[in-house]
Structure formats: C-alpha cells, structure tokens
Length: 315
Image (cartoon, rainbow, N blue to C red):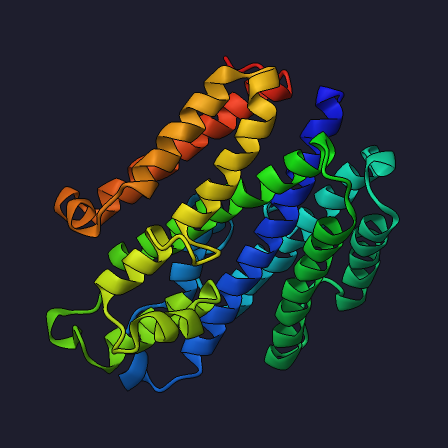
C-alpha cells in the first residue's frame, strides 16, 4: 500500500487514542479535586495533569497558574495546543478524509460524527458538570471509533497500520501516567500506605480502566509495587506495557518482514524485555529510570516506523 495511506491510518488511530488519554487525565484530576483534602493531600492535581500530558513547558508559556479552568481549556479545547482533544479529533478527521477509501463506512461515520458533535461543546464548558459530560463523550467516541475499526476492517495492511498506531500510543500513555505518579504525586513518608496514598493510586488505576482488574488479580490493598506490576508486566491487562507491545510486535511480524527488518528488531527487543522482565529487577534499576528508558526506546521505534514505512526522513 502507499506509504502516505499507511501514515494517515497510523496517525488517525494515534490521535483518537491520544484524545481518550487526555480525557482520562482530566477526569482523574477532576475526581481527585472533589475529594476532601485529607484524602488526596496537598498536591496540585491540575499541575500533575499537565505533567502527565507531557506539555508543561507549553502550558506555562501561556498560563501562569494551573487550575481547573486553565488546564481544562489547554488540554481539551485550546487551538494553541497541538495535542489538545479538539486538535486531536480535527487532525484525526483530516487524516481520515485523506484516506477515505481505505476506511469502512462505519469508521468514516464514526470519525465524521465525532468531529460534528465536537462543535456543540463550543470553545469551553460552561460548568464542571458540562466538562464531565464532555470527557465522558470523548471516551465513548474513542471506543466507538476503535470498535468500528476492529469490527469492520478487512485484516490487511490498512488494518494493521491502524492497530499499530493504537498500541504505540497506548503504551506511551500508560508509561507516562505511571512515571508521573512516582515522581510528582509521591506522598510524604507519613502518608505512605494511608488514605492519601490509597486514593492517589486508585486514581492512577481508574485513569487506565484498571481498578476492577487490580481487585480481581490481587484481592488486597493497593500497593505501588503491584500497581507497577499490573501496568508494566501483566500480559492479561489490556493497557499494560507488556500487552501493548505483545500486540505491536505481532503486527510488526506481519508487516515489517516485507518492509523493514530494523523496525521488527527494535520491536522485538522491547517485547522481549517486557516478556521476560521481573519487577524486582525493575525496582532495583529504578522505576523512573526504567520508564524513561522505555519511553526513549518507544520513541526510537516510532522514528523507525516513520523512516521505514512512511518515508519520513529525520535530520
């Protein structure tokens, strides 16, 4: 297939997944700020939301303070933020239009209706309740588009490049959420194991739809080590790094042998590190260092995808 078509399908999926991720970040921050201070500590959840989204520098270049209004506007509606939810959906629809013939009718209807429905929310929500409805709509819209792709696309290169975008973006998002919790939201020593620690970790789990999964797997109190294990190494947890790279590596095996052995090699290294990884080794190495290295290698893999499949050159 044309590299331009593969590129558009890949980024269409990534932008829709990124919009859902941003909605989850904002919803988690909103939920925590409604709890009593004794439950969540004195950290600024809105600053944390910006850090998790990876756009602190861009945000503070525009705003002097991180609060519900400024962060919600920047991450959800701002046209100045290239990765805002609004811009994610608009770029996704633009990519969809460019490859209209590669999409099924259901996929096009889903992304086009998302773009049209987006307009009714205006430039920003008029109340906290409307923001909550918007964030729920974003997550539902992402699921609708993802479901339409999964249920209706022929299993050919178009489908595999689309799914590759989903899992590359999802792995990146999960790693960032987990890393920020350890280094921005860590409670004071006296709070470890207390209410503050519990609600912060519960919020992290809910932000990746893993709270119920954690209860079913561990049937015990929430601990940092188990949360990290669930979101890094558990193969049966859909948003874990291991599960994402399982899916991505399988896709690379299908497409890379015809296009790029280097992309397959890099994906295989990442997959093997997670498949044979152990939490005690990861903690000995340092969780932050491990996640930083993972994100770096994932970025390198993304660059190899661009070079090998989409003919994008880097200086």
